[in-house]
Figure 1: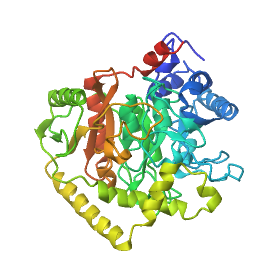
Figure 2 (figure 1 turned 180 degrees about the vertical axis):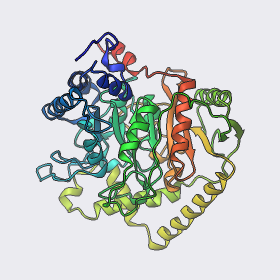
Figure 3 (figure 1 turned 90 degrees about the vertical axis):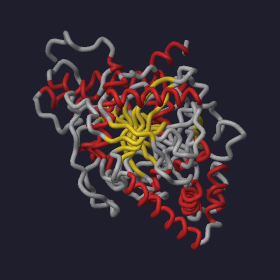
Length: 477
């Protein structure tokens, strides 16, 4: 490599975009970056449990090949040498996909990559391993019968949220730069909010899925990163079409992270403090109100408004429990005995849903989607808090006895899985305990680039770096 005068002394603070520039200048090697990530995974994972599989040998081999290409000035693709991770709900060739469950065996041939995995490999990305999830991604905290509890680096006694909790923790500590999450009711945005990272749920069908999720048209795949620019980079790769996805939407146009485009001038934003029915913690509301002031300072036209729908929790639950029932219906008695009791309970509720009830939920979902389409005729974005509460202690599915199940404490996220809209969570500040607060940005269907461009501008204004690394290292002997 050439002169290293401008190389950072610590690699843990780098972004994917910065790495690529240093690779181009031959001032940094993919081998050095991957070795650094693997070393920090080894140091942090025993406590935080973000990874259920790490492939040291394979990742180093791919990094060495990438280094050789960069030395010749012939990178394989736009992610060549960039460390990435895949959630354990997504297929990876040669590695087991346990889905957090004891009900299936890891000792079977794993011969296929899911589309998102394939696109990352084709672009030269170095997949370090797989991140943790609750069983079949069924809840909004991350623990499973196979891999145990995943912890929040801001405070390891607290949950990072879920179901993409492992990916969020990896993003918060920069254990790799690009992390694939999935979101069927908030599973990207909830842990992004709880860990102070950026998470983006694209419009349904933009990022191809195969095999289809058990939650079918609720489930979206998307990036989880430390910065918006890195998420934009990742989206440009994973949003390429794949013939195996029969639900694929229109071609994704792509987006550049242009430093000159850090304005919201002319953007029409509808700000809803509570969707008309959510109780939000006072300190989270204060942080969100302050963030809205910054959006105005960036030139946005902000009006305080509610979109006008009642809580669709029963509609969402019908689809969610029906999906759980579909999974369990294929299992024998021995497999069912190995399941997380909460997941099994949800599946049993799903088995009792009648065809008439399911069709009624479909009709109400259609009405909600139509209402939001009408809303976006007047507003480019709907902005809300991502979460109404702060991260809570591990080892439980709900914060306290006032909540019955996970959807009770995630009211801002699941409505927009029903409508299939693009939605992001971006860090907006810290609550009174010094824990991260997320701001949710929701766009009209297929306005993915509008959401990402707005998030990029907002990040430039809020400028809140992830403090998780310092906080975790200070608390850990």
